[in-house]
Image (cartoon, rainbow, N blue to C red; front, top):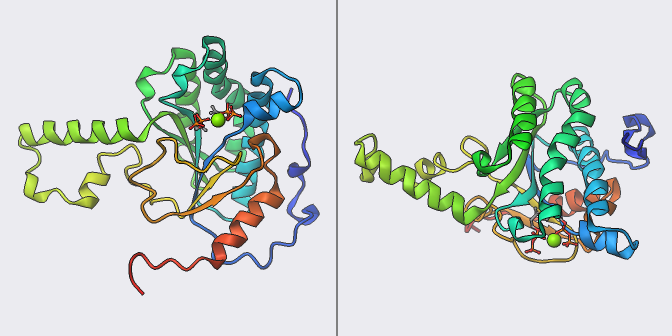
Length: 253
Ligand code: IPE
Ligand code: IPE
Ligand code: MG
């Protein structure tokens, strides 16, 4: 059973005054990092951190909806995470199923649409089936889009795009002089989704770890030392308020 955490409070009960939140980012991407260190600090096995992190994912989805964010992209499993010990990989890949088993009814009720980016076909069947079911069940929802990056790596995404483009050129479906940045974007997993406005990474690491290299070209970055299982509404609001102060010039003046 999942824990009932305070974030399930209604809007009225929210401890934080958020009236001053204007200019909310349309698309927020999060590198949810620090589960292992959180568990270690508590003397628990790493997977206890992943389990806790799963509940925080649900909370964060609620917060994103509440604050009118339109798209939330969550880095859940990278193409490099296969390097971890087998039992940890297995646990991480079972989490989507457990997450959806626990929370899908709520997500449906809250009009959330579930999508994924990444090499979906190479995931184990138990992951694919659970996630595919959730995609089907939520495909007509028009609230928050939650985009899970599952078996996602940006370099392999770009490689894949190049191969697809070359194949289409070979098949004479595409002529090279038509290829521009917008068209290239349609060959990425994120096709049709606007670039993130704000990237958050928890746990104090200040790197991208192969996440959305193309899409983050003009994204605002926000880092916190807080470990993912401790991510809270306060921290999220802090990030959103900081975003409000940014001046995005895109190379202009
Ligand atoms: C993030 O936490 C979850 C995944 C990468 C899947 P970590 O497992 O990377 O935790 P740390 O960084 O080792 O503390
Ligand atoms: C990035 O975190 C991947 C996810 C959050 C899923 P990692 O913990 O795998 O990244 P590194 O190894 O610290 O760069
Ligand atoms: Mg990590």
